[in-house]
Image (cartoon, rainbow, N blue to C red; front, side, top):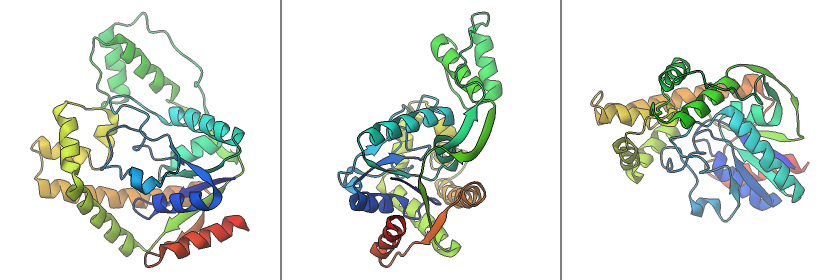
Amino acid sequence: MIVVIVGPTGVGKTKLSVELAKRIDAEIINCDSMQVYRTLNIGTAKATEEEKENIPHHLLDIVDPKELYTVYDYQRDCRQKIEELQKKKKNIIIVGGTGLYVKAALYDYRFEKETEHKSYKDLTNDELLEKIKIRDKSIDIHVNNRKRLERALNKLDNNGSYDHNGNTKLYDFYTIGLTTNREKLYEIINNRVDVMIKDGLIDEVRHLYDQHLHSKAINTGIGYKELYAYFDGEVSLEEAIENIKKNSRRYAKRQYTFFNNQMDVKWFNTNYEDFSKTVEEVYEYIKD
């Protein structure tokens, strides 16, 4: 059995995944595009070891934040992990808010050039870097590191165009969505950011900033890009925190739009007063 748990940021997906995994003896595969990165812990709301409750988790902390990790990489890694777990006769829970990762991994989502590896021997390092910056200005690779330059450009080329049918399922799975009303969700998001700040998000991001790390993960990640602007002196700390909250709320709205338009989701309202009732409701649905 494969169960996919989706929904907006902060709605309770991680907690549901762990509780459900205990019920159906499942292992969990991460489907959050930021949680694949090592050291990005607080800002990505990554599950702690205590929160995992000894349930095996996969595709967490697999990439250095300096590296470029794309939807193509996730498609390959997730499908490989599904195959491994199915051979072990394990139930699988895929959980996260990155809808495109879900669609790429579980549907017939094709990359036109996914097996092509171009040669760039006729290009200088400066020309390679220029081509990369045209495609993605956030990628930060030293001009003398030719191996990384070629690897980055290959990845960009392989992900540059899609024949993303995305309508044909490659696996049998349930897609469960957690939701709540907008006012409640925005309250949760705002409070969650406050807790992140209290738990050390500023220090986490400062450590990355002091390393002069300017990768795509940092430059696009909510919670990281806003604090970088603060460290750069562009905004005050209060403005940076408010921007994290605002961008998180906007992201939640985009997530709803994607899941409602792109996927067939069975939605459940999260019961925050008694979460066990939500777990039971979802369990009874997939059991039946």
